[in-house]
Length: 467
Image (cartoon, rainbow, N blue to C red; front, top):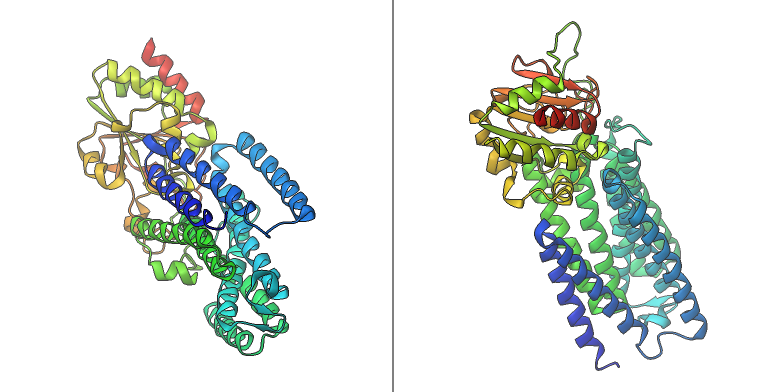
């Protein structure tokens, strides 16, 4: 089995690579998931079959752990709403980080079991790997908890800042490096626990000042952190597959973070250091409705306008996900296409608080893939569109991102829906978006607000189109 294990790990690693490749497109995402499942089954079975790894008691504990974790995972996957996926991902990242911390601590207290030395005399190379795994894992754990709390609404999505915050983070970072050096020199238990505490504190402090509008980038970066933590522990355990898997997750998460930063006009270095979205004046920016009037319309008005249009661009957002309106939306698009209307869908990179969120929902409703376009592919077409039908997308359509330097979303590329001849905007109320910024689009003369639940309003529009 020892000779067979490297080959099995290689096959599992290839499966994980194919999983990432498949998950890069809604068309192949199911196939990608299947590759991931096969790879993980091979990895677990191979590891359990390694000689000398488990005894009767440890096998029982492993089986019990797999049963408990598998049950929780299965129940969660079946019950979780699509709108809650971003915070679920953040919660899972926290568990990966915590697992890295626990494994590193176990290796430190029982180095003989991992063949990395003896108690109080662990190899320096292993101590470095262990320290990095602990530090990155602990930062991932607490940072992901903060991200989860913000996305779940348990704490405010506004930036939480205080004086000298960056200086404090820098000081903790220096202390963390010194503690790692101390651990490597002395094999000190105290040094290890200081690393754990400093990293846990840094995780909180790095994510707290980041506003809700930037949270999708944070979740992506924490995904990368969890991968690097796993890779670091893989070196400690001398497990090639864990190294490969961690590197795949870490690098893919970093690439995705870079793409999202580019899509939101953010600095990748500020993301890593937690230094963006923290303008204390920004959260209140964006103006107030006051006595400004908005033009409100009915489903019949919207149906009449779209039926007489030649081109309609539909912009889905988080409100569509909350209302589960994607199926009614697809039916509406089908009716319009039968009337000779050119119908397309425009997706912002962070619509729905997580990359790909809207793509998955539209795919679930069987919207043709060739009708769905990303921001850079379709943005120039809004100027020639007769109608932009916005359903629950708020911050990603807000012109303040281009005009208000005090806004927390300033500089973020948005979908230029305001350039369409008519903007139909479905929203429950005039409340601000997730970033806490009022949408200037509501008050534009070419905007008609359709107030109500996204699914109900879309169904009413569909009924009017059919009649």
